[in-house]
Length: 364
Image 1 (tube, rainbow, N blue to C red):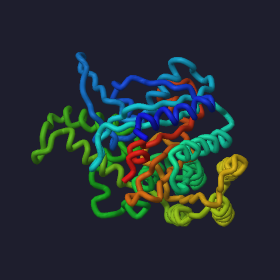
Image 2: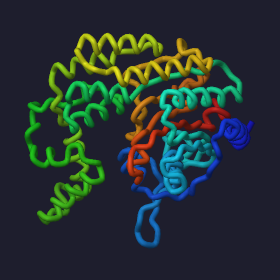
Image 3: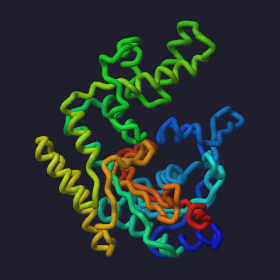
Image 4: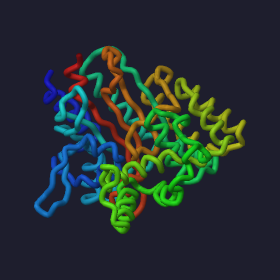
């Protein structure tokens, strides 16, 4: 089966389940992806400019273009979409142009049920290609956010903690506020920490421009700004007791039922209210079981986080055990605030997933 055949197979399945196919334009506004997917995406995008100088990019993924389509056509009304076609992203050792297929559910308020539905459809899709039982990894950004909020961690520190976890570096990568050199340029660092990367970089560049600084030590104003952003990202005001609770949380792993029990025990021991986030977690597990999914075979890890800024809740990856590189063949999750950032008047619940077809059909 070719990758094109695989798209037809998946779209047929998804349309049968009520996910209508759409195909957003290949050329997309670059700033949207940088603002919402994180600065890391810029290094992997293929960027150009239009006649007015505005930055455009070849579509690096489908979720944001599908959300923009939804906002323009349906607003807050629930809709389901499927897609299949080329995306463009620089990937070491792999082609920069590759085919993806996937689906997005936007606007449904039965959050736990639709989370389970998306995972079930992802696994149903993989069944179309045969092979052994896949490895399913689960995470929950909603639980992490709820824990950090319950600990009373300040917004700027919260952003740093989440980035440390998402990057895989862990809490040990966060510098202490009294570490050597931590107070150098403290005023500027305090002004930019917690800001969106593009806004923070523009602020630093403006300060340098006002001071008449173009280059220092061979570095341009933009490069100097990047160094300040990195310094700001390493500042933290994480209290010892909060750090200890977070470190304990990050050791939690097991099937979803085991994980829920461990988080409830942690919440009780730490006198934290995580009931709302845990209820969603447990309801989702129940809907998965109701769909006939073997939840005992799924692996939850508190350290598992997908490296895109817009995920807010349930996240997952599916791996083919025959692959030796550990790269997912399907990945997705919940992104309830993305459409608001794109212009919606209020948050709109949304969840989806994408298939890496070159890793499925063209498996080594």
